[in-house]
Image 1 (cartoon, rainbow, N blue to C red):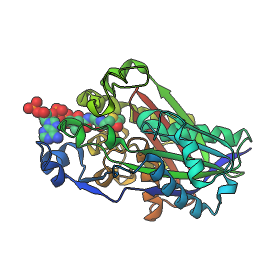
Image 2: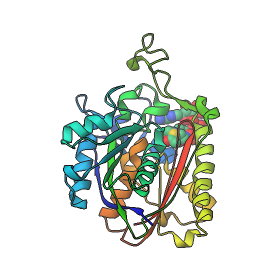
Image 3: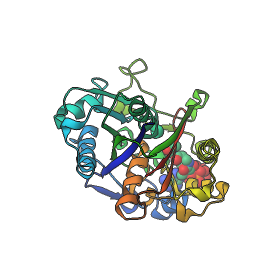
Image 4: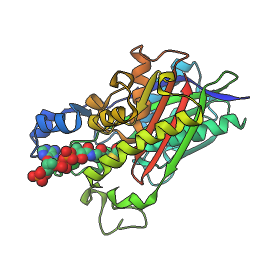
Length: 322
Ligand code: ACO
């Protein structure tokens, strides 16, 4: 039996940090409001000339170095993002070209904040099918370029970044299971109203804003993150006692606390980065994974449960032995 195993991780955050105090200067908000409602203290914001692929390349370099692989080894690139450089060609091909990765399958997956979990699940299937020997899987966003900095209800929430993993085949158990889901009936609760076939000419991206029904998203996020966690555990006859770390999508600290309460698990078991990264959409899970690994909390052999939820709504989990 072939499993896929994470053999290296990396993250990259743009240098520029925007604190809540910085936001107080541009919009009618306070550090106290943002901290108590979201837990967020700061976020990283890309420069005008930075592209999402630039962030991906930096994160990928770190992951590849840790995995001890070169560009010649990579034979699949999958990127979860909703903020690609261009409509086409897809961002994975841009990363491939920038890094000098030889010809291989390279594509992106658009599943909002669940993008990385979708990408990892997809790459896992390529490896288990025997088609891929070394996959570069990335979750990345420059979501701040979609933000209306005059809309206090959304601009305080988001940040930019990229997280990457290298996945290789292994005879030992790595990724144990993946579960993906979506329900398009919730589109109106969280969306961006411009696309190629929708308002592109009439309303340029600069004139639009993220449309979000915060309270509704909050409730569904808590319920869904908890249920996808349970789904993964039930499918493997495991309980949360068997899991060393939960690595959830980092939307809001209160969402993570409510999820932990529902699951009856201590927040000590939940990797948290939302305080310093904000909500980085598809980048949040791989960056949180990398933070936990690099600060020594996540160790080889431990059982990890990745859970994500995002616009669509989309959701998913990856249960793995690290
Ligand atoms: N600063 C100060 N006041 C604000 C701000 C702000 N930045 N934003 C909103 N307010 C005000 C509102 O105008 C409202 O004022 P009013 O009562 O006079 O009308 C008041 O604060 C309360 O607003 P609510 O929306 O009820 O505040 P809530 O406690 O629900 O928190 C929040 C809002 C943080 C958006 C919360 O609903 C949330 O986190 N929802 C989840 C949404 C999310 O995470 N989206 C990210 C993308 S989805 C994803 O990643 C899965």
